[in-house]
Image (spheres, rainbow, N blue to C red):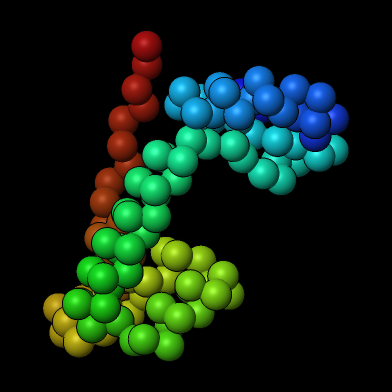
Length: 114
């Protein structure tokens, strides 16, 4: 993946479009912070298809429509689509407590030396 400044992107835009069309990912920075990316139209289409499949899966698994709409609007991170899908699984109610109890009961692990 290539990372360039906005100034360089402006002066080499035609070249960058060609590189992106051939599959290269180009990150554009402003003051050392990534602000945009150039990708091929094919890759964008693929990402949009994956996003659509993820939304359909979350919806099929019973995710609330309001939460998915907030994700679509950019108000929530897409990872939130999984939030609450296991709310009716009684087996998971005390999972965190069991993990912490298990960690407390473990003996110290031997140090690994190379």
